[in-house]
Image (cartoon, rainbow, N blue to C red; front, top):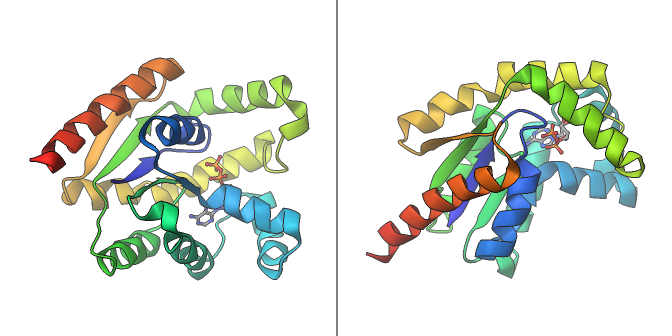
Length: 197
Ligand code: ADP
């Protein structure tokens, strides 16, 4: 089962991806986490990405497509994965379709966590307040505003791309975490039943 979690920064993709990883044993493939790991490790890729990420802009498509391609070859992805923060552009989505179909696989569903932009600033501020040690350099109001702008300009068009493929499912991302998780669980249970037939 391959799932894409979709939504603006702060929508709760990472939180839900971790729950899915626990419940369905599907690895969470977060390009944001992978890029931050590359920065922490001081690799060439990390050095190239840091300034872009600190501004809240998008890292080039070929870079993220490359890291996802390598990751998909690891054995834990054999039964599928949860994509978190990828794809973020139409070329990334097309590349993902290609990578999966070359592995005789496909995306089963794209789950949009629907939220209000205005609430995302508050969520970020809370996240920073509750856990200042893990605050990211791009978690500040100016950069978040840019990240939201980039989301609407480059990433939101993917909703139509997946709607046309009949894969888009929408969940209320403003609901409490367990309720969002339950809604996603319902979708996956339906998909798993369909696959078993
Ligand atoms: P959020 O969803 O809160 O914006 P992420 O951890 O997913 O956070 O991403 C952080 C940053 O990493 C993005 O602002 C961008 O610079 C970079 N990034 C992550 N994923 C991608 C991607 N698929 N394409 C391009 N850049 C990406």
